[in-house]
Length: 374
Image 1 (cartoon, rainbow, N blue to C red):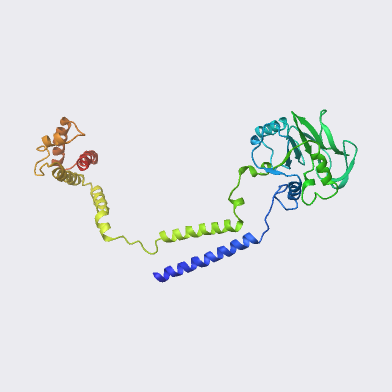
Image 2 (cartoon, helix red, strand yellow; image 1 turned 45 degrees about the vertical axis):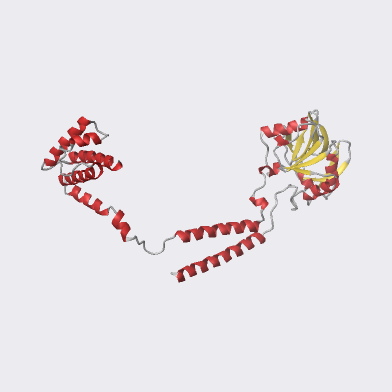
């Protein structure tokens, strides 16, 4: 038995080493992946370069909470939203609008700004290569406009940038604040921000309003759910925790697993088994020996009456009637008398049918339970 246990632990140790090796290769063999347009992402599609530049020169913070927590008073803040991963629901959009109405500005970079802040868009064309972009003063810039949509302006809007296909950026007053919408978030990407005149265009747009602080909205990139295990701990630690969990389950299974045949102690069988009783009952039923079974049950109840209530065993059921009337609680005194009389007649019969047997067996069983429970 000890040899078997040693082999089991050896195999568990080998399995643990295999798990650790697999976890190491899984965690170190693949570079970390980052979603696009996130200010913490150093990947080509991230915006860490521009965020870091602003942080070093002007100071900038990340906003990772729901829009309802944005300050409602006039603080002259600039909230930069870069290609949201989802369109906020109407309640959240109302919170963003109230934020602008209080005197703050939202700078929205989105390929297709339709469905946000009641903006409308019309089809245009995408230009991966540099094209000429003009501002409202007629100044020309070179930029790659990768969006196929152009923003549809309203009469009160101020067109900031446009090309031959339509409006690229506009400014719209919202209460005491404003909304600046741009269809080219790719300008801020790490691999594009220094190309052409992208950086100059970004600063041109940021200069269209006055602000005392800048926030990058990361709630629209899924940061609103708060930190979780995947972000708080390194991947190798998560893999190791999973492996330890699996090994713990295996160890618990091994500790509770019964190897070999089930051996029940003899004393347990002798004291607690009801197999003989069940076999005897089945024999009486198959042989229709209802009368014999009923007499045995009645005799056993009389033994209990003597043991528990002191009713002499030698007395007949009718002779015990008065004593039972004082002891039995579940039957009235008159019913006790009828019970002993009819039971005596039944036991004196040569045979009983199944219906009589079942009915009287239940009555004796109720009396037996009452005697045993006292």
